[in-house]
Structures are given as structure tokens and as C-alpha cells.
Length: 413
Image (cartoon, rainbow, N blue to C red; front, side, top):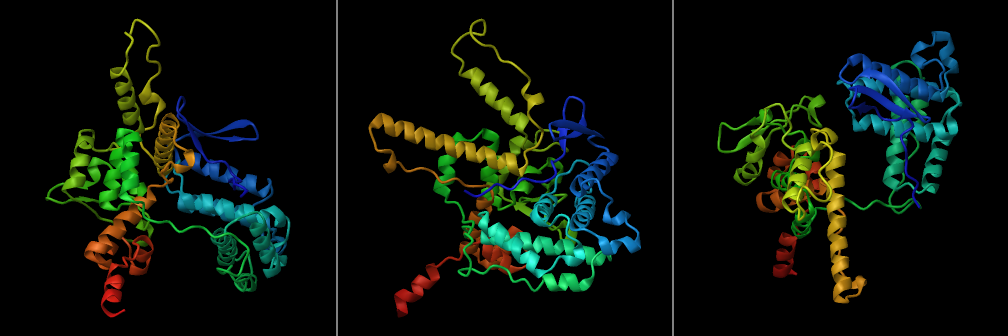
């Protein structure tokens, strides 16, 4: 069984009743102040770095003559503190890259926590490689973690905490190659078939179903779908333009413009009748619709049986994120599969003969859109729609259509 990696530092959470930010650690709840305050994020970043360093002075606090005795955990704590401030410009914002850095550092510190940076070399890095393979990590995952560990030392060189020869020596450790390692291989992300999507839609909440159809038509990223607001849309022409205020390549100075055609516009129209600054797709809205449908299907009068309890708007958030979006799809797929199994039992059909839906994620909708666009309009069109700077990235998302090769084989083969 593959061991699940846990972040060494707990994520910041919102206490809705008081509006304060907190974390759960060692069976205790630790508060850091109001959720929207910049000082709250600064306090959390400092606490996280202190937790990682074991309460010892950070590398940035050491005097010059003490840096020759810098330990690996001190370098990691300083790196995490810098990354939390660099990649999280907004208070309470969660950035995936910071979570990745925490995983890199956990892999580094498990066996080399107290080792001096000057004593850490290629042999130690290869031992980390071997340990990760033995623990069941994939080849791609091991290479990613090793690359991230090197990134920590590279950052240390830029801050004059690590000597350049140490980082150069770590770069000599080769990544694991396909077919030349015992590490397992990850299956590539494939486009999801429209038949699977259509079979899943009836089991999805209405709001999530509209998100799925919108993403399939436009090819936008899951995060871009979740962050859509009426104020981000330019509806002055027949094709609407959606410019996300924050996107994956914003820090590189690139603009992201998503074109929304007539079919996607029809899906969006009901969600634009709200204040311009609110998110179009809201879990609270989805919960409100679900409870309203339950009320319509109620068979017993309100004076009898159970009565509606709680406030759906207070229990659910105002925005889907990529995790809650994906979880909603997984629940729907599992629901469809349960229904098919139950029906097979009633009909006396062997469960091994039941066709079950595969689990799929929102990112596969982007792959499906890219493949369809490439097949009909070519690689350049797919590149523009998906928002890639280079065509070779688009080829990862848009599966190559082999129909042209088949036609050549029919004629000359």
C-alpha cells in the first residue's frame, strides 16, 4: 500500500463563528487573529517556520560566523518561511506550491534533520531517492521530490546560506528513468469520454453539473471555473471574454483570456443575476437548491415528521475550490456506480458484468476539450484556447488524433 503523505505543517482554517484564522496541532486549536488581516498570515508563517525548525533560530537570524554550522532543518525552516510569504500575497490564501514545498521538506527532514548543510551531498540525496521508492512513491513523484529538495539548496545559495559547490554536487544525482527503476509508474491523465460525463451529470448537484458543462465547452482550468464572477466577464460582443484576475501564469506577466460562446453563455446566464463581485458557482447556492428540491418531493405534511433544520447558507461556503469541485464529481460517480450495482442485484446480473463508470477529475475535462479542438481546428487553435505559451505543453493536454495516420496507412500501407 502506498503511504499517504501528510503535510508537516497544518493548513490555516477559518473559524466562521468568530472570523478568526486557526490551525489544529497536537490536539489543540491555535488562533492567529482575524482571517482578513495581513498580520495573521505573517504570524502563521512565523509559527510554521518555528514548528519546522523545532523552535531553534532560523537561518535568517544567524550571524555570519554561525552559518558554517547551519543544519538542514534550519535551512528548510527559512526556505518555508520565505515561500509562505512569496507565494501567498493575500491573507488566508492557500497556494498549492507551498503545500508542495512542505512535502519536499518532509522528505528531506525524515532522516537528515540534524545533518549539517555542509555535510549533505549526493550520497544522502540518493538515499532519500531509495527510501521514497521503497515507501511506494511513483517514479514521477520521487523525481519531483528530489527536484524540490535541490530547489531548497538552490535558494540557500542565493541567500549565501549554502556554498555553490554543494548545490552543484546535488545536481549530479540523475532522476529515475522509465524502465530502469523499480518505482511504480503513474498513469498519464487522459481526456474523459463525453459518454462518461453525460452518465455522471444526473447524479451531480445542478450547480456542479453546470460547472462541468461550462468547463467542457471552454477548456478552462478547474480553478478558473471556480473563481468566475460576473464582473470578470466582458459581454459587449457576441463572444464573451472572461479574464481571470488571478491565474496560473499571472506571475510571468501573461494575460489569460477565455472566450465563451453561445452554448456556454446559456449555461452562465442564470448565474449572472447576482452582485457582480460574488462568485457565480457557490456551494451555498447549491445547498439551497438541493434543500428546495427535497422540500418539493416531501410526502408528509410539515406538521408531521422531521422539519428542515439549520441554515444552508451558513453551513456552506460562497465559493467552490478545486478540491470541493473534484470531490463533488467523485461522489456523483460513486452514486451512479452504486445505483448500477443495486439494479444488477435486482435483475439477477453478476456484478462482474456490470459496466461501472471510472473515477475522473475536472482536469480531464480540459484534456477532452483540448483534444476535440485540436482534432477539428489544429494544434495552434488548441494552444490559444487552453492558454499555453508553447505548443509542446498543449500536446500533453490535447491527445494526438491518429485518424490522419490511419488514412495514410489505408492508401500507401
